[in-house]
Image (cartoon, rainbow, N blue to C red):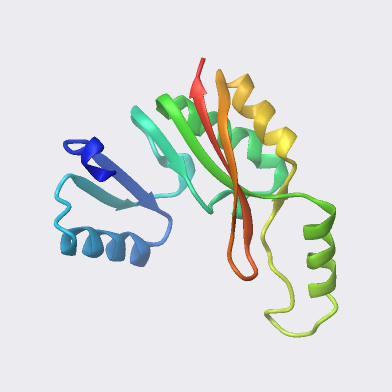
Length: 151
């Protein structure tokens, strides 16, 4: 329930200025006044927060940058991190390979897939323990959502 978080201060960023502007517009239309929206890349986000949430961003980061991204997110969080990523499984790898067979700009997703063990180990190395995990899905998009708490 949102009443639990009444009085919380929310800071939200997106690399896209139009997305940040739209989020601010929607928050205002819902009567949310305690949220600040701004445009920033993930690496430039700074500050300290009780909870850091990073949803549908990891798909844009190659595996070589994933651990650094998680380490940075954890450095911002006092208590909790929520992160989603596209898990690297044989099924999703196969789907990407099939997509590459079709010509045209929408032939395959550029989403990076990440091994769950790598993500969990990065959280653990940053001093966090996964306390909950879920799979999310739409018709053609799947992601793993992890909640981790500082230990």
